[in-house]
Image (tube, rainbow, N blue to C red; front, side, top):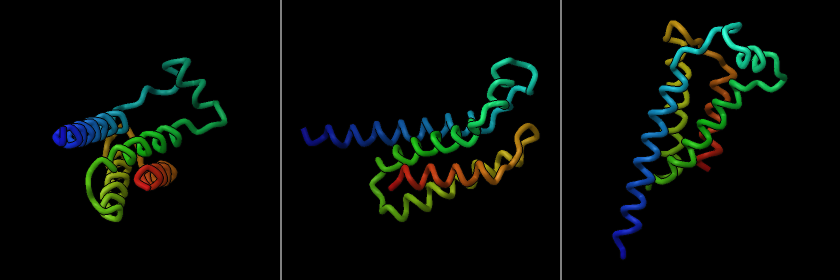
Length: 116
């Protein structure tokens, strides 16, 4: 019976890493060009910045998943903020995405709230 929490923790760690991989793919993949789809046109014209919310919620969820790792909160925050910064800088290094300061803020807010 004592093995169950250990297995559960391992599963949570695996889910955390898989989710991080999915975040990398989602945040670094090319976006459809405006005008190519009605959905994209509608999202661009809305008053809510969906890109900001996507970054915030995506990294908030990852921050919560990251707490399954048994580390000090400070260590988790350093890891989480480093990944948040890396994700946004990596977007700036691709030819199809750009670095945006507001996305960086959303990333850091998400992981900070998720870890705490």
